[in-house]
Image 1 (cartoon, one colour):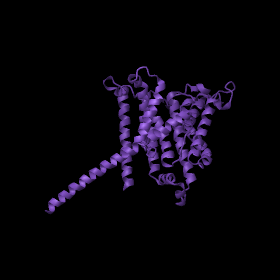
Image 2: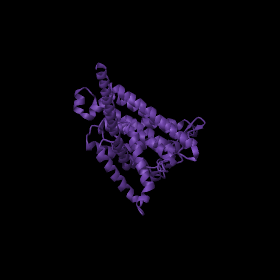
Image 3: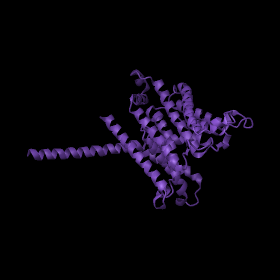
Image 4: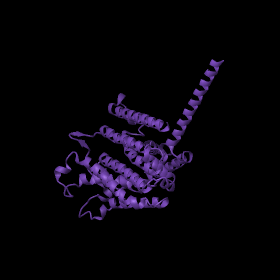
Length: 377
């Protein structure tokens, strides 16, 4: 009965999210009364920010599965995010320099092929490195993923160790530019309103697949691993195989988001894929609730909203304050959130809804008993 209720709740959640997405897109496209989406939030949240929320939500969904359900700490998720971005960027902007024919590089379907290829490459890479790394536990695992993320970031920054004069592949610190927009035949998925629907389509798809995983035998195995690997192995769960599988899945989602980011920004540089980027993803997962898939969009939306709020309004509260104070205020807000909501916002919302359901059920039972006593009398 509980699984049935969860299934219904998730279905309702998907429907409500879809309605919100369509409503935001409609408002930005039609601009009733000459007002766009940014006007609704006093230009704190722009339509551009909503697209960024969607892209990062895809990454954090995978991170929630890896950390919140399987209990495997990752401090290098931004590196896998970067792999997808750079696969799309390199082979669309440097394809001919790498010896690919022009007809192939300029074909409308080529970027779509690279998105899939990037996901497969990232998943295969994660499978190879995951087998030895996931044998580690606790802070050792965290340090290993941190080292892996830094290594990939350095490869991006240093052009894979190749002299730029010989072959400039990643663009170094300057990155790559003039990444093409996505097309379907002769239909360009731009301006931003079109790309917005594409990004959130992939968000919905990622949510549906991940929620099905969580409510399946695989999800139960992941929760068992999180609780106790020894107990899970005793019950016949192949812990090593399940951990590698969830890592591969989470990195493939990160790669998909990276490709969407590259075609959204039409430029990539190493900075978003550094340790700072990975740390921000972990913060988003923790604030939203790493043990709940729905915590992903919630955590991303809250963190980006706080960042935009500080960036646009901090100078109004404290005159003469510069951007260097923003990380301090941001950190204090995060500390307050985690003190009062250590498991994140999504579990807190679930507990509140459970209390409301129990209260309504108790009130209903009381009314039934009163009616029954009146009839008997």
